[in-house]
Length: 629
Image 1 (spheres, rainbow, N blue to C red):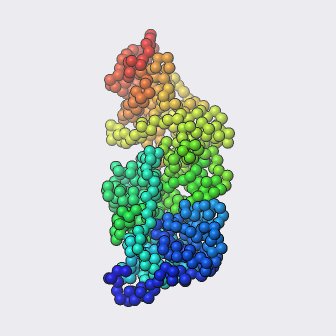
Image 2 (spheres, rainbow, N blue to C red; image 1 turned 180 degrees about the vertical axis):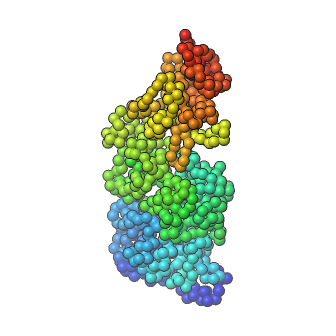
Image 3 (spheres, helix red, strand yellow; image 1 turned 90 degrees about the horizontal axis):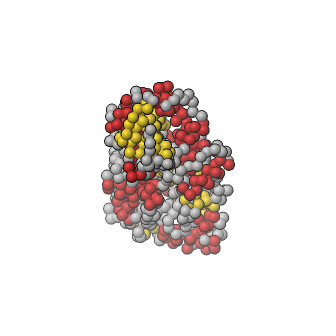
């Protein structure tokens, strides 16, 4: 114990000091015992409790995820102990799935109220704390979460004082006068390194990073995907953190300078968290570090607290998503796997945030690619954690699907597009069978050319987004068409077209990105997009030349959009081996004629029946001879 502790607090501490075996004598048969969570588990006290099993019967042990030993779930101790899991860890999963331990599904921010209202009354709290400071205050170290509420509610508090537990700052302190017994210990705090970043996780991280703006506040967790996200944010500035938990990857982002919390709207200058799961390097970094504030989960995870962070980006993992957007996150079929945790807390909080982005991320497949994690229907018995009404962004290594406010048809198309290519046709057919998609819905092409998605600046300084067209653009493309003047429609189709049928629109948005390629220029407001212009080409298989066509909203003409679209089409044509373009342009369409003539590719041009016929050759060696007449 610290030699700086003042005499009154020292006397209080010394009077309550016991061995672990003496301390657990305070526990009686029939008690409900809380054990500290995550890497803050009091390992010595946990073991001592189990060693006393022959004297105890009917003791219920409650906790969140723990990374230390959990011998109390062994079937041979079934008469002595039974575990109630608020989150299922690997050390208790088999017992829960076999029915020898209980799972209590609940939002993390609501668990403390179970203790405080005595709905789940606690008799004893076993916790791990740091050495008392000179004023007699112990820090709850790497795990405050629901532990502070447990201590405020339990009849007896037994604290394992580990001189290797970091002293974290914030709202996780207990005075020695509040604790009934102390057990001294010295061992490295439980460490967890997480999984390495593989290429799938790295791509998911890059996809998510595209959604994160400078000045955003992040919620992440542990594992390869959260680590990959943070690694992909190297070009972002002034990021903040308000998160249930974090690991070593956050320390890397802080030391790179990406995370400084200066632009946060709530608790600026501070990382707000409830617990940490990491390594000694991380724990040493936290010790007495005022940049971090550990607070209880009923505050940190409360959606109304989360929502006070502007540009809140919540990133959570999920197990399975069906084509309507229902996300299963705590079970695999009827077999419970983990827990609700803070996922919904932060999904709903980020949805309330000004400029917030609730994100669910997962690899597209499981079991070494044998099964798709995007499914027509969730498995029998599986529980929906994030409902289809709460879901916003779903991210896999194949892209981002934005589902909020979208129809079932739009959701199914968006999710199939980010599924693994080998499962897309099967998902498409199932969606048709279930009536999510029309029976004549074309197949989706396997590879979306995401390399062509980019923000560009027009000649007047306006920034817009260029991207390949998507099957979900049907309604926006209709809006674009009916916003064109008759003159612009005539220039696009070389005839007067008064309406687009559903079938025509479906053909226009379902392209193969090779024989039929289409780009759109959009302006975004949040996730709402307005199509300003379209550019596309149709390949002639015989000649290997493509016919090009453009349409720009009248009020956006002469601002450089057509040139930007044309550059993207050139780039794609070169990638796919298209020899060149053929264009028919009316003689009075001066802006388009200028774009085509200034591109440096003009091979031949002539006027036929009042319009120019123009050939642009990209790759002469791939062109078949053509007679233009």
